Length: 192
Image (cartoon, rainbow, N blue to C red; front, side, top):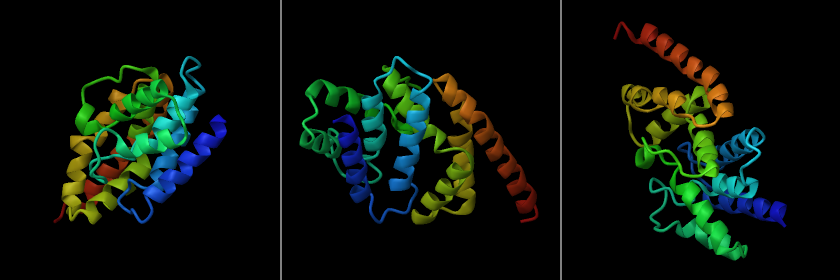
């Protein structure tokens, strides 16, 4: 039963993000899901189904992508799968704790929320994070320098904001890669 709901959620987000190329796409969702599941292996007290569904649906109502309210897309899917209201509330609470801009200094209340937030933030740093930054910037008309500013405004802060030990460990090499990238950027860009 739980495996079927997770598979259905994957298909739902595949259709929801079809044609998106700004870094908030199906591939991003699947990376966040896989990372969240990896983190759950180190957190035996978490509810794996809540983490799975929250990670898969975490961008289903992202205001950058959809004009929905009250987690309408996520709730529509969960109701279609006959998920009980208590679980829906936990999933939506976890989803609502993910956004950096809305939750910058707030810590998610649940372990599940912490895991999903960590997984999403891990996908914003490292090689993938660099690629996503420029994909998003390009789609939204940002200059390269404006995209570089995003590293200092957000991406370089994320390593220190991880909650779980596994995420902290995973963030180390990704953060170091971004620092190396920025050093190379400055070296190549200094003569302009």
